[in-house]
Image: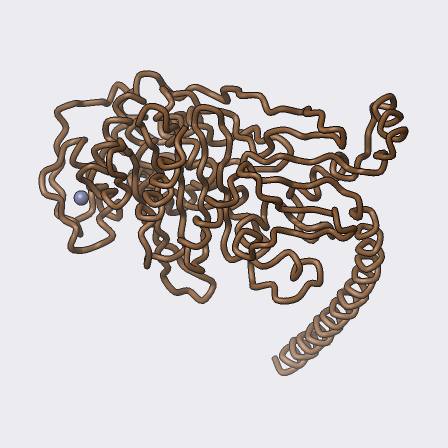
Length: 468
Ligand SMILES: [Zn+2]
């Protein structure tokens, strides 16, 4: 026995030495590769700086210059708040942020042309080295306003035209100035990540739009369904209940359940329609597929509902995945969902680039207005009514705009941060259904402290002033 213990000790010590050695080796390797990376990045930075000396402009839809090389040096938006709000779309010439206009449209911005005749024409006129300009669909003033409204909270705001798919704002916070990205200083944690296009957020109660649609189109639909909500009493043991003990909605039908976002009612509906039906309906609204955004990458939304587990199913139906269930979506997609409901079921391909112009002012690459998909025709008129009711006299009243018909759905979502503390996210997606004002909005804040509906209402009121 003693001999055995001795051997075990020896083996343990051996493994300890081995793991320390491995760790030390890893640290050395990492340092070496970091040094190598810095050297390569430093070289590239100089080369890129030279290359961008005659690059084309990046211009917002409201005419504000977001990137410009006319002084011989690449410069970004003069207004710091515009620069902060546009950072994740515009990017920087060192390409420290990828998936931006500066990096993905580097070719046209630097004037790399495959059309030799055009190139010859420009050369003759002495314009051969100049790059082409990129015209965005995004408004600098509305982006700046969205960033200001977020008040330094983490999150994202997307505003779009649901008839054309033109993205008017796609703002991600925290952010930092382009100069900081270039010199790699003052970069707050997570500030280079584009939450608006690439965030994977849990939908919370905004998912009830999908659950409603699944139910309306299923054999399980029962117009007379009423559910008694006592708040803290779950719909089924371990199943969905109200997040706030005070929220007991009493006896609710579909309209009351949607307007007040009743988890008990929707937990029951989810169990009635089943996992496959929830997944199929989410797919019909664009989950699990590309959103078709040209030039930039937008992350696809995901859904996978655990089979044969009623409690998990009831949570999935209210947009709070538990167990092995997966439900994530991007703010861009969330805005597109509300937009499709308002746009007679047509979800449009989103755009951030409107067109390009060459140094002679000739326009090309104009964006094409295209339908991405049609959400179920049997359900969108009812969804439009329910969302309008939720803003008129439900949880979304903060999104109201005087003289306009606004619809929407609120959401909250409980999650745990890295420190294991509970965090509450607030979400809102909505639309303006007033003829001539085809705007949809999504707001996700990683903080319960501010109303997503209020930010949405402020932005929709501003688009209402700008007009169609
Ligand atoms: Zn309830």
